[in-house]
Length: 385
Image (tube, rainbow, N blue to C red; front, side, top):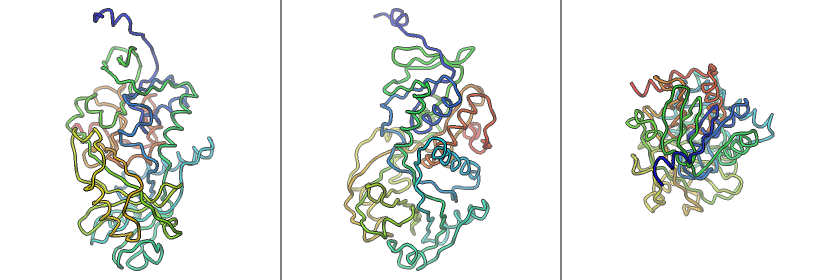
């Protein structure tokens, strides 16, 4: 078939908003826009709910004391309100409150960051030191070391379930969401954008890029500042009331490595991971390769430091990839030279908790409304400069 014959066979479709990427953020944007009555078409190169991005997974952490800094405070408040709204208005509860700890066994680090964030934000917190940590949470064994900030409002989210629900509800409300539909190309035209996806040509007034690690290929100006990083997580058997009553926690070790742990939840076992894992970064790490013994040894070392009673033979393992932006901050906003093109966050591996808030922000930007959150700290201009 000639190029002209192929072009003639393209089906043409017109919508208000196009979305490229239907992970958590793209799904939340589609849902928020569908709630507002916009016509939406979203595509993803992989099957919907796939495990090749950064936002899949059975559970994710949510924290109201945010050690990453007070620039996130307004976004934290909007996120908690969003999860509450889901439960109150739509009958879906995806949040389990467990409490949360930010623990350091070194002189500075995450404890000081969390303490500063808690004091500045005005969120309720407690400081626990030494044996008081283990007395409060008997499953933990830090040999009497460490200082921790405890936040009772922290917990975990049923992330895969929440993302799937948002996609399904968006579809019920008229959104057209398609997996296994790679975008062959897109271009700016006078009144919007044209996407070539599958055997269709899609025109839209506004375009939202939510493609995570693939954003750089779609928006070349971003390629130098987006860095994919391989991550590994595992689940372990941890039976007993002391494990069930654990909070979610982050532990910064003497060597400044930062582990994160979730208590057993809905039969899934105790979940553990290591931020930055083996620091394997770059496009070569977008494709999965499987979990190996070196990966498991790193996680086992982290468990030995804080939960020596846990069987270190994993029940299950998984890979994902974060897409890191400068300073590990989010990127959210319109492209500087095109206010109709919205970049919806590579979230540097800590974004899932903000899904309802970021979905609302995306809808606001696409519908030319002012978001409730100041986006200046997360602007596209910041990273491009």
